[in-house]
Length: 401
Image (tube, rainbow, N blue to C red):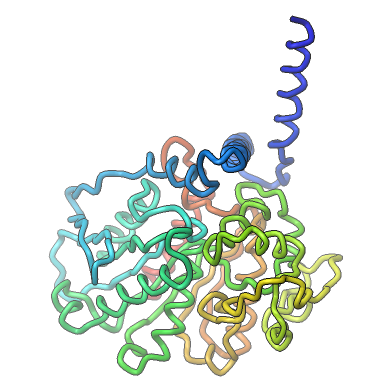
């Protein structure tokens, strides 16, 4: 009996050691963030064990749990909410009830979730889109694009692009009373990735290039070339999004082959013929000095992976891989980055490159910010940092859209 108790106690200690991550000193509401971080790490460990036992895949467990948070889309006294489809892609449509003397603004919002989970029906995203529609008197479209690993790159991008092109048609804009000169595409995390990609593609489309006034990217991932940037090293264990979890999820967007994820962990995933792209994401020249700290730049290692993934050279996967001449065409841009986030440097580098290309860009850096904060601004967690970020987002839209 004593031996069993000892073993159980040691197991608990090892488990606590595994999931515990010291939090940065400036984190607001550290006990809440600590609990959320521990829950995510526990789920990640459980998912890994269940996958190794052949019971359920890593992503499936997260997807199942997040579905428990899906809300029923109901209209309220201010907003009519419609569960509908644009070009066979499910969308959540938020329409203000109050009559407007002029045409309305519109926001197309793309949810995050590492391309493998999430929905515009999540409680937090429903809250955000409803609030945006009410505060701005705007039409808001939330897109439920298809998810990996069942639907891999470029399906999510094609779904979002299909919805955007459908919505931008003159007859559709007229149907919903939208001003064609006041439309924004926005997204958080991987939704920010898709928002950046779609904005680039639409701006190169003669039919739609003048119909996007602004893009908003909230802690976006913008490149898959170099995964040893200072923010990856500084925030390797989180909080909230660890480097290992991001790599596992992100690679599922491309393949189920675990060899890619292993190569990415070592920064040895880029194929031959990719070195010319490194200058576009070189943090030693593009990252503001204060974020470089004492880190030493080393190039990603080329050609180590047996299987070749040409998609890693595709700017539709990594928006930072477009040329400066392509960036010059982009509309008014607002980027929010968070200090305690492995994706921090992607956003900071995009800000630098957009400014170098003379794009009108606004940037807010949240010094105590964490990845995924928007997802935790509703019950039961209700993080203040999530509310602050959403306030910045909506206030910027109100002033600039």
